[in-house]
Amino acid sequence: MAHFAKVLNNIVQQVMVAEPEFMETFTDSSPGEWIQTSYNTSGGTHSHGGTPLRKNFASPGYTYDKTRDAFIGPQPYASWTLVE
Image (tube, rainbow, N blue to C red; front, side):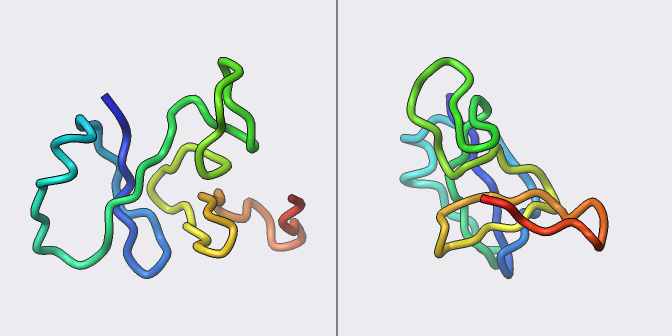
């Protein structure tokens, strides 16, 4: 099983679990796109030593940055800035 994030206007709307083969034929008529995310990825590292996928596991409210190919968590405080 894999996790997929529904992204609309660069914001994660929801996350679902599905077989990758299912996603290849899945038809979703609502706006947005489904992007794979890894439950084992956080802070750009994979918890089991594998290859990290898109920097972080996506959650609703996260931003998807296409340039970085990364899910980025919400800014917790206005004074905080993103440090890669």
